[in-house]
Image 1 (cartoon, rainbow, N blue to C red):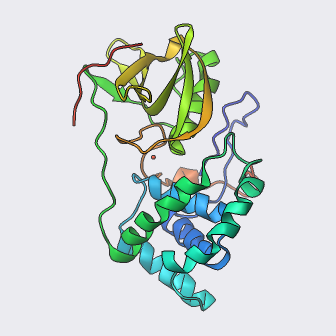
Image 2 (image 1 turned 135 degrees about the horizontal axis):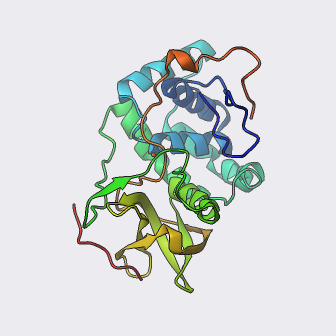
Image 3 (image 1 turned 120 degrees about the vertical axis):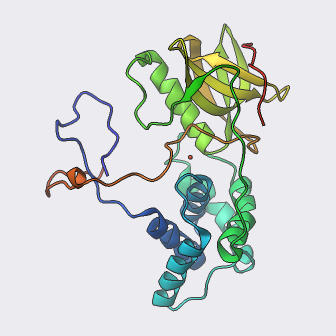
Length: 266
């Protein structure tokens, strides 16, 4: 897979890294969570689960997990088996992840997501499906990892902050039109007239709002989490196709996720 690197020193041939397939990464993280019950594994398991566009059927992932646990001679993980280790995991949350993330999500929210993960992978229950925020006019959802070139450079850093917050279900303090409003970020879209808009929900009123991206003045991640009311569309979508051209020679690798009326802008 090509490594995202949007800076001027990007090599002409790109930067490449060998990666796990989704089912291997998910199975490995679930197995590691069962063995170690560490914050990093909890964070990864929940984030992989939340990227529903890339998820394979639960039966496929369970089969991979069963093979990994059998190889390690350990039992399949259960939420009940992890529960006694919760206090220890919570005590390590900030120390292990605080220096690795732009903002640290509440550990309670990630722990609370585990029962749903286990119900899905062990019981085969359908994962909850959320509807999209529907625009009032024709719009195109922007989910590519690399932002379109015609988005102003000064807006790119705030948008990356917003994307991180959305992936971790964290609210954003958005500076717009001379004031700050706290929002739940959901979707970046291009309108028919070529503008880019950020669709969100105001946390104070629960109302749908959209904001012109070129008029955003700043963004900051908060420690306030939210339970998504709609599909979060600010992360890359779906599995990546692997073409023959993606095979790179040694030496080029790197170490280095109901409709509404048109919203008002406020």
